[in-house]
Image (cartoon, rainbow, N blue to C red):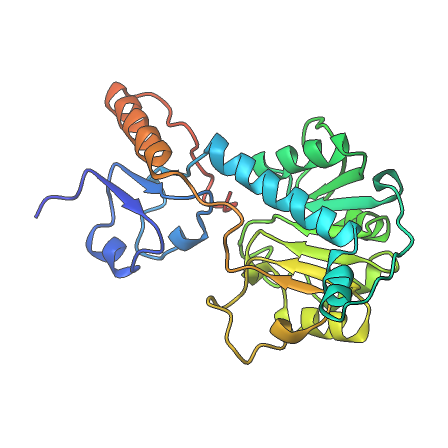
Length: 272
């Protein structure tokens, strides 16, 4: 039969692209495009991701919550409450806490701005140098060590690409400031999960808020479930609004018809 006009995909069976290798465009139904790194899809087919202001704000909400949850020692107080213990603890101000965001795309930038407004000392790390942003930026592998050494709460918002897969493990945790904590809202694949569990169990990391995992649902036998100071949520940080997605796809199809550049197009060689 004829090739489909466009394909709208979210974690679609890769066989679809072997059978239908050359649609006019492929639309990812979310912010990530790692699920579209499939052999069948021809390289020159434009791939477009959703940029949803609503999704951005949901991510800002979640990351702000997660950083505050760790900063305000909430898991300790929740434990105290379960034991009916009244035990106030010393609390630093946000301005004394250095937050580091790995991955400064649309989401990372927005999270950084809000955390900075709350007073946190925010910096970001990116793989490739970029224009001035609202927070201090460390770029490239050579700046990673300096970025980690200043970071007390590390937020991972990196996409899942061959360069980022397994990037965050024991060697990264070892370089973080003392008493560091970790928030993962990017992709589970970027973190070496057993090394994360080890860093938490040994006290190298003092706590974590984790929303994404290498295998989802997180298997019942994962050690992460039972570690003290760890909050687990089931990949709920930021979902796209179906109306926004449909609207963006329709507008992009209109651009396609007029021969214009598509909004939200992704460089698939980089993966973002």
